[in-house]
Image (tube, rainbow, N blue to C red; front, top):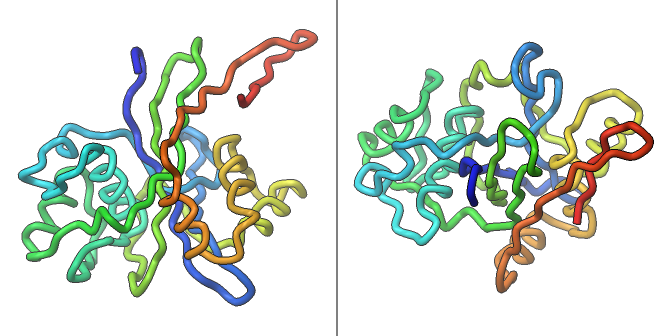
Length: 219
């Protein structure tokens, strides 16, 4: 979309007693969304477009490459076959090169396309963000990026309750997606829903003024 940067966000799920959990990380103060708990994600970088480097062949290859790279980069989880680990935090192009040097391939089929959110018009930075689901199997978390202070697995309803009691801070897109996950009984069920969608229409919130205050309306 005009004036937007492509970006990817990954909602990593794992099965848990009585349901499932999502992986959230807290952003350091002083950075964008400082103090807020967010899903792993970021902008699509130039290396994510290099199919010879990423090995991903798909219509949305660059978004998927960015999604897989960001999860590996931020929380040390490599969705690959065979499994890959790293003792150090890798960044950018080095993530793709590490996977290739390990003789592994990205399992981009592990990502199910859930939603597409576009930053409202009028804001200084606008992103065309694709949200993917990924169900964690045997992967382990590695060293976390300096972009996060701590990571934690939380049930969606528990994360929302903690936000409502001001125990944790969540931003609007995170809240919306946690609420979207509430009807599902398992990670597998949420994944099946995402894969069953015939098409994913963009969601572009609007910024409006009400009684002198700025409000964000989600269509």
